[in-house]
Amino acid sequence: MALPVELGEQCVPVDFGMAENALVPDLTGRTAGAAGDMTAGLFEGQYVWHPAADDLRLARACVDIRAGRYFGAREILQEARGDHGVRAHRSLVLASEAADSDLAERWLAEEPGREATLLWARVAVLRAVRAADGGDTRA
Image (cartoon, rainbow, N blue to C red):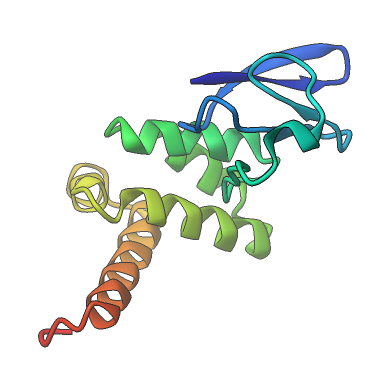
C-alpha cells in the first residue's frame, strides 16, 4: 500500500508493505496516515515501524528486494561507500529483506562485486543466526 509522506510541499508515495492504518513519520516529525493527517491517538497500539526509517531510497530498495530486483540495492550501497554507518545500516536492512529468498546468491552469480558480496555475507550471517535461534542442529 502506498502512503503519502510529506517532504516540504511535495508528497511522495512510499510502499512499505504496511498495514492500512499505519502512520509514517515524515521528515518534519509529523505523521501522515492512510486517511490523510491523523493524530497518533486514533491508532493507539497499531503502529508499524520500518527499519528504513526516513531513508526513502532504502525503503524503495526494500520493495525492490521483495520483488526480486537488486538494482536499487546496488545503487544505494554504492552511493554509501564513503559513509560506513549508512552503508552498514542499509546493508543490514536489505539483508533482512533478502534473507528468505535466493536474491543474494543470484545477484552474486549474475553481477559479482563489492555490493553483491556485502549483501551475500549479511544474508549468510542472518540465516545462521536465525537457524541458531531456531535450535537447528546444523547451525
